[in-house]
Length: 415
Image 1 (cartoon, helix red, strand yellow):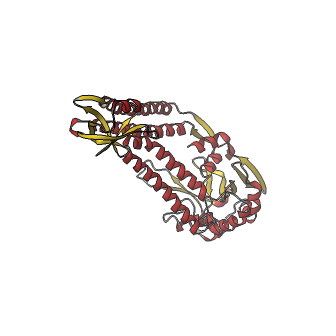
Image 2: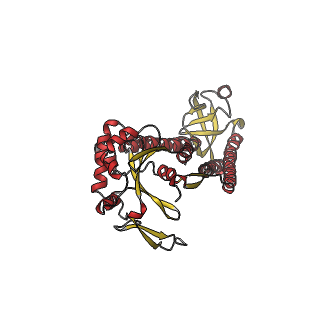
Image 3: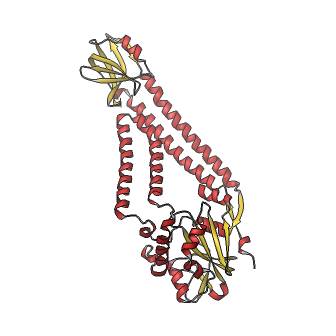
């Protein structure tokens, strides 16, 4: 019989890179389309049908350092002029207080709640005309948006190349299975976080208020200046994701040795007295019954149901125990594995659920090492939990500690 440690799974290590490229492409496409949309809108806002003129007398001219704009206050309006288009020094020497001028501006184009001046005239003499500057600025947004979409296309091209040339590596079937289930919890949500419900409720409220605050800030920025609002969308998305990540780490209690007895109490109670159907209504043990392990044939298409192939008695499987340890409150998961390969050359390898544990105990199924683990779980956790991702094989009265392949850890954690 082939040694289970030599049983390999093929993994394409470029899969995570392809997923990252596709995600970046989506961001590029969305960001590029947003910039193009705003650019087209600004060009439309500068249409003659949207430009009006009014005659006003200047009461004040000052420079806004924070927003790098010149602010012109008149008897009936307040106008802004971007310093990039025309400097405050030029405006202050060209225009004079208490003088009357004709100001042209767009009804739909404003910044910081003030009208953006397009042209200023006096006695039919044009003193300031920044129409072309606005047009160039608007078209530049379209150009930048197009450039960002081009980056998305380049991403897609690289994605297609990586898809055609996968980088396949072989890993232990146990390593892959356990690491894929590394963050799975066998303990109920209520028990997995020994925190008061009021604390969890308050933390959720604070999290939601912060998210609403971020969204409100984005809306305010868009209302003040649509350009700034457009530029702020990507930082908003990044901040929102970062906040969500911090929240997840905040409510998941870290590993503390003093909490191990509490976890063990909850975990044992969960396996012995509860059911996953309390949380997943459709949960069922498809491959296990009171007599043995059920093997099904894989359907030829997704519309067909698997067909029963054979039943293998538990005594023929030679089951033993593996425990995965991790440095967090839910500090272990128990698995059972068979010495015999039963399903397309692979062994039985499954996380112990309450249904499975109770079925095994009810039918007195012998699982090497399982009783030992359950009777010494607290000591085993304290002995084996550290910074490494590891599992321990309990078999034939011995314990064998194994660290999961570091290269595989990097690959899975990046996915």
